[in-house]
Image (tube, rainbow, N blue to C red):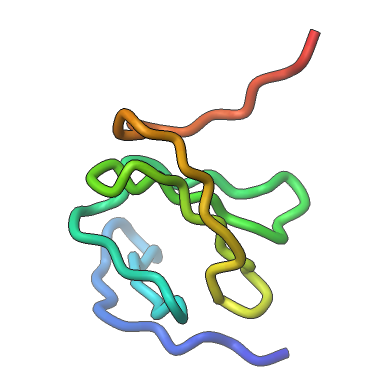
Length: 83
């Protein structure tokens, strides 16, 4: 398995580091409004508030696999069960 290169790591608690990683093709002008990981661990969804979309990240390849245009500034993400 190939691991990503981590950047800007800093300790946040005993034994825990917070690190950033480079995602090919992903840039945003402000910090994310929320990050949600698919239950199977294959994708992450990142709320890009200033740009009005949610970026879909393939966690195996660490690349952007899509954009979901949502408008109105996405502000956080959550799973919702269908009735």
